[in-house]
Image (cartoon, rainbow, N blue to C red):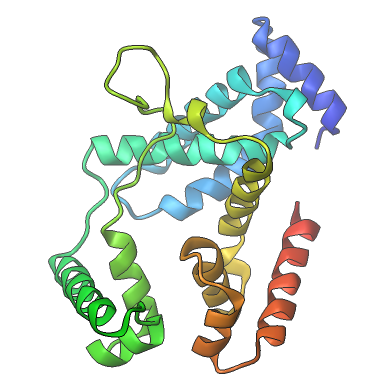
Length: 238
């Protein structure tokens, strides 16, 4: 693996058109591309095609990377590659949602609206799972199925000004939060079921530690400790 300073040097050379530098960067990031591609297996696209699409995302990452932001190139590359693959899958109709899942998502939305009107609060994942007689993972999957994946390289508005969504990503304090979410999503598969649930509720559902503690039947302090443990795993990995 290349050291950060050495990698940045190759990136600068690649931007200037040095094909040899691009080759070095691609070889250095091949394991990262393969790791990302694993998440899109069995989606109706051949592995070689996925790798080629991922390589296009890596090339865009090289061309757009700004080392002055003091962000790891691998961290910057992941959303680029994932966005490129999702855009291709969306445009080619490779992402399919079953009719059963769509129906469950509709029922959940209607029940949630009624619950909020009656209780002035949203139902927990556990309450939804109990009401519909299914697993909590099924509830989370149904809720996520209603979200259309969007490429970071889509137009940010209707005007023909060349601005893409990635150009509108907020900077400052929010940038660290975004990067943290990206890194967490990469290691979800390595977490325990309870840790994974905490991550989903905390970082993707914007639930507070107190609300999660109620869901898990533990104290807020325990949730805080578990969250710190998860973040430590992230730091060790990256």
